[in-house]
Length: 267
Image (cartoon, rainbow, N blue to C red; front, side, top):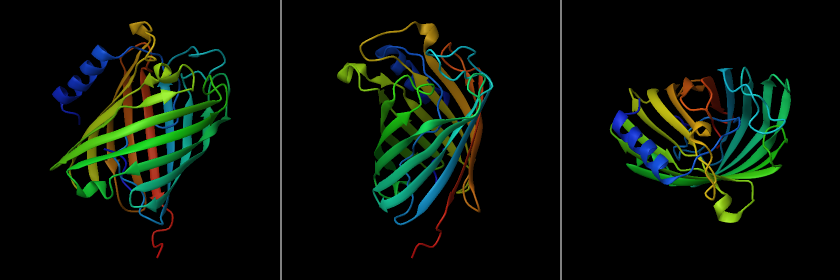
């Protein structure tokens, strides 16, 4: 199951500039997964397991809210279980969401998430693909400032020969403030596929504020990532590094994602 995708400078700059012009700004906490969804899901009847691991060797040294996990030197991740229910629907469960090490909390269980992912079936076969992801999270209060949060993630993209261009205009909520309380945390990617197995990509992750407020520009999140993917064989692998170029981002973060279908021959 492929979920990963060098960003051409002009399209990515366009995404970033447009977002900065129309949206407010924000500070973003730690995260268990760092990826852009490409609308590809597990085949019907297949269980897939993906292990997310993120290490921040140079990160923020103060918590983003009182008691929060400190990003600097932290290791965070999740075990993501996915089941292909229909060609257009995948059920997911992140259990556990965890930290292996952090300066102020050590090893910890940070909560769990339920995910519902709806997509255009067989997205890899279409020039234009799309989908929508919904997540419902139960959090430890050192992971998020609220016990219950959710993510709404539209997915849009195109396959152009060897190139993939994908955008996820993500909206997060802690169920306060109605629609104006949503936070805009978009992500996007462009990838060049050398073959069906190998791809190199650049990704952009941004954090802007609630729709009803603006925070100082120095606190917004902007991180640019270089990643490499290998799909096929015993494991699908994505690895890369991200550079934060704003006060709300971490200076350097590394990620590794390993995934495999657990029942390769369900029928």
